[in-house]
Each structure stands twice: as C-alpha cells, then as structure tokens.
Length: 144
Image (cartoon, rainbow, N blue to C red; front, top):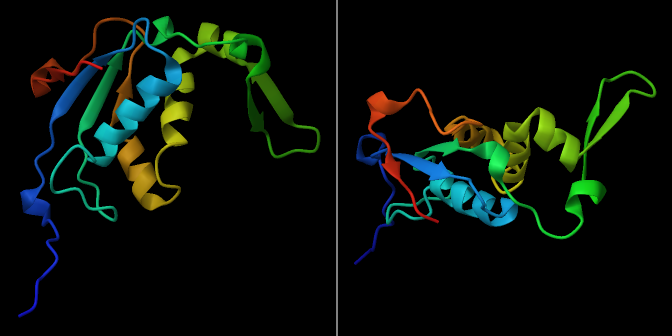
C-alpha cells in the first residue's frame, strides 16, 4: 500500500485578505508575521514549492518601531550601475521618506530568493495611512 503525498491544486487554494496595523509594532517581528501569511505557513495545505499564501495589507507603515540604535547604524544600499554609483540611506531617513520600502525590504529578506518569492511579495500592499483602497475585498483584521 502506497501513501500518496498531498499536493494542493490551484482550485484548492483559498486566498484571504488580511489587514495588519503596523502602529507601534517592532519591524522584525512584524515582518516575520507578514512573511508567514504571504507564504501560507499558517494553512494546513502549506506546500513549500507553491504559492498558497494570502494577501496582506499593511496600514500605518510610518509608525513602526525599531529597537536599539538601528535608526543611525542600519543603512539601505542601492547602486546605479555606474562606477561610484553606490548610494546609502540610513533607516531614519528611509522611514521619513519612504516607510513602505523599509517594511517591504524586511519582508523580502524572509521570503524565498526565486520566482516564488517575487510572486509572493506582489501580494503585499503597504500604506502609510490608516486607510486603504481594498475595502471591496472585505479584508479581515489580523492581530499580531
């Protein structure tokens, strides 16, 4: 008698929409919860090689907390592709200018580094205010 491994079909995947309030949440702990929702690890049909996760809407992204002296010592780097084109921006400046990029970068580091991770990251919607345009999807609030 052979026992077959269950693999979910595309029709079996039910995607939910969750709203996560980032107000007064620590960045890393918030990112781990979001990454688990995006991957679908909270579901019994979780399969590592398939995208079975849910959509996540993050509101109040500009009100997150970080511990220690990360505001001054943590930097985000980008390169233009030209010689000497390395640009560094501190966490404090990045939070002031583009707080949604801080959360996106933290979550992206916790997802797979392949096509699957890029597909899962597209289900993350981040907003700096308490409002979002996804009321038609009837999202549920997710308490951390």
